[in-house]
Length: 286
Image (cartoon, rainbow, N blue to C red; front, side, top):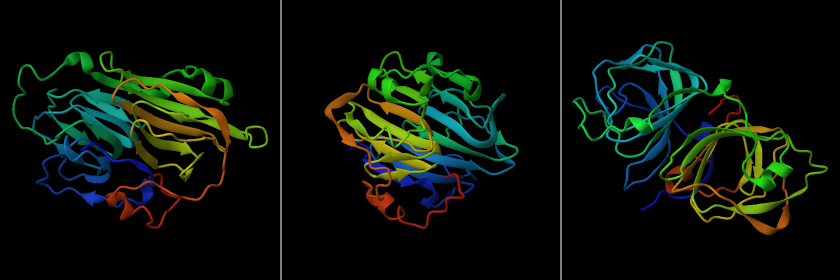
């Protein structure tokens, strides 16, 4: 069973869950689960490490872990990650310890079962060529958008590619767009991708067919789903991943009027449906 379509939830409505001291992964942290694959155990979450949090026992994970720091700082071994930092930690990499002196909120992607294993990893598990030890994304330059149509229409567009797998073509990037002028930017073609697109909105707003996404909005969109048009009155900054291969875009033949204030009409999983209409507090980042 593939991960179900979820588009979109404001993560402010998702309740935190406390992980006990005997939890198999990140004991003592809190978690906001966003989406998961029940078969592969891959999942996306926001993990919150309280000030003074520590895992002192050396361990490893049997799956790859990818993350982006939303707030605060935490460390794995001798590497400290701060707000805006990114890393990709391959399965089997030794982790002497993990800690957070000041506390941290971390957007985290596990690619399979992610229990902490307190032993030496098998010799053939760790692939150091996949390691991205740390990127300070705030210091990376913006580069032009790769899609010609989007680049020709987008105001203030730019991207920062954080990871691109040379074998699969899967990619992780940060994208900025806008703001758009609703008087001149009135319509846009819809788009379809042959791979999964996963997004977490860091700043600004996006007007789409499911509603107006605000900071903290999250979606997992399977391949082949037509979507759009997209516009942003405020400008936006988002964290993006594509899964299942390289992301390309097939545009519709005709442009569709942009609905800037479309009401919230999400596509929800049963789990998300239980909390998607909880009270939304715009003062919270997620």
